[in-house]
Length: 318
Image 1: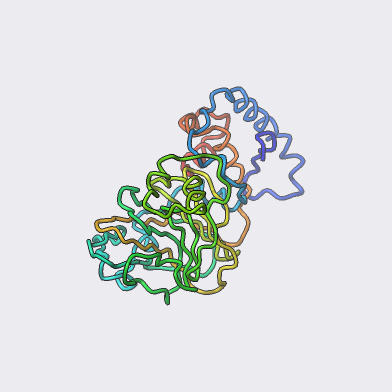
Image 2: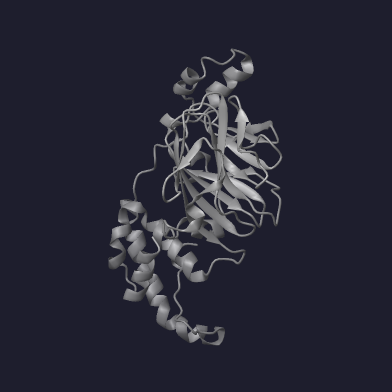
């Protein structure tokens, strides 16, 4: 949706009043378009991150969800479960942080306290790369997924009831099988990935994997569309596409992680969600304006040629 198509109709307007209403509100749309385009050169420079070139297009439903204000941090969907948790994980008082004890020859997992059966949902997972070690996996699971295993291995994705992304190797796991690398397309070579994998076999397949790895930063967003049966991830503000499809419908699915690193601390926060219904037109218009402004010009909302109530709406949904 471009700035030229933005229109505001007052609450309670009906289709039969649109013609007369447009005569009143088209000037507002034109002045807003002029204001936006006159400041196009102020847009921030493109990111140097490796992930924007790998981003895929997203639905308006997901775009609005990702650009909406996060819900309160204390939401129950932001908690790790003290019941569905390996004994090697210790939870903070608010249950938003899980820390793995330094236990040898063990792989341990923890699930969220609440799962979902429907809707589109986004969680934030904070996990420092310095605290991951090998076999650091984030994903989703059903309640029947095991949360402890002997030795060092992938746990989330090890059985048919879980789906995981191994952050160290970028591999996707399900039912004990490595399905693919994620994201699928690579455009950069990372020498640090080769250094990390020197201890691995020198076979051609491992050499190829070493050349295609991407270092995953601390913050990863987990995007579960329980209605569509898909799971994907957002890194550096870029949605990297569907990692898994054909997830079971109508069953409770939980964010989950597994780790072998002693002292690893992993934080969980539920950011937002959406029902199956399409986004409201007002939300789409607000999204279009915020995207056009860019991050560096969000503080100029009060200068928009819009009524104060609309300015407040845009500010409150950042």
